Amino acid sequence: MKTHDEKIAQLTLAEIYPLYLKKIEKKGRTAQELDTVIQWLTGLSSQEINQAIQDQLTFDELAKGRKLEKVLRSAQ
Image (cartoon, rainbow, N blue to C red; front, side, top):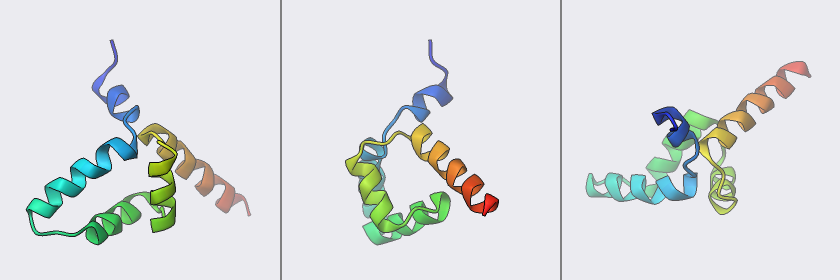
């Protein structure tokens, strides 16, 4: 049986994004504000967020991609 963290790691941004958007819109916030928060948390650009949604990337894949990029940048 998967742990809670393992279940979260397998969710895709495409699954979660519309749920977050619906929730924040109920509170009077916008998609642009949601994107700003996601950019701040992940370091992804708006274009990269949209690509991650289209590519059905999981949170685990996003996290691993970010770590790899940081390692590659620091090696330069």
